[in-house]
Length: 223
Image (tube, rainbow, N blue to C red):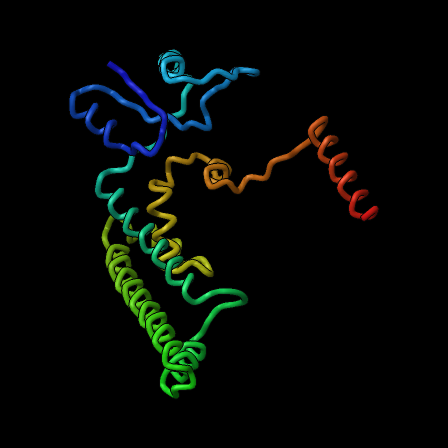
């Protein structure tokens, strides 16, 4: 028996269970499922029948299913990125990057007692929270650095780090998200997978967009 289902928040659990039961299962990329022009109906039974028909005809593109180990490492790297964003919420409001001088200035404010008592409490808690988040992020960085030295990642990470501007953390993001680079037969396919291939709008759609822009500009000038 052969089965398939669309990639979704369900993850890979169902695919792995079906394979354990001795059957073939593919996870289909939703964006690459052929659609009939003008087709508006969408419900579970119809979608299942359509997927079965297209899968039998070989017209569906399946995605690569990572191993459980690869998925756990990817989740760790993703969590580090999420933790970094959480830390930045405390620090960044507007403007550029903060440096060591900024943190030294914050500690000076806390030490000199220039704030009122209540403000001092709030400021101290925010600073302590920021320090905790940065410490945990650094610990995650150390764990990811150790993972990058494992045989499964060492070669790919080493090659990516030869490129200017790519650190070990950035390389691990690319490796864990992309997986096996060799599955892309051409660089253009990799760029398309990453969403870096430019698109062209031409003909009637482009004319409509230009007309809309002209109307907006005319309205602005009138205002």
